[in-house]
Length: 155
Image (cartoon, rainbow, N blue to C red):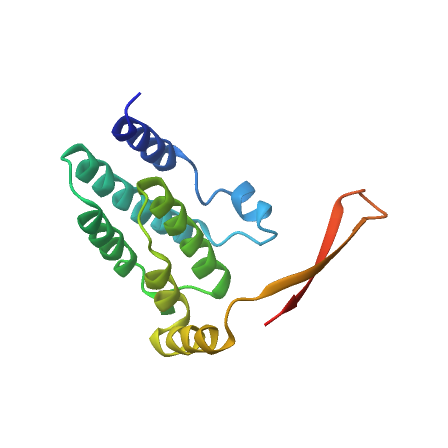
């Protein structure tokens, strides 16, 4: 299978998925939005996926694909959604960007947090530098036996 066909298959699977079902909300630990909102979100994502499928089929480059993602994101007016819905939207756009191998984090941060806060976050990371993990503490949960880890880091 070619890389192009693999991407197309993943986009088609994304499009066919029931992205805003009650179970999808429950997996996130959230109460579902109303049916009208879920239908609108689903429709906007399916349109974006269709545009990406057409673009991949016609051989458009990464820059053009990123432009399609940006246009798709612009169809979502941030102030129309609550925090949980905005985060859900960003997660799905992040999935789309990973499928088509396009770096879209900056656009998502601008949409989610606003340009000013996103710029301040970048400046803070620049001055703070990368964190260095100096120790990892781990233990098993007493209820479910899942491994829990705590990272000790220096900035």
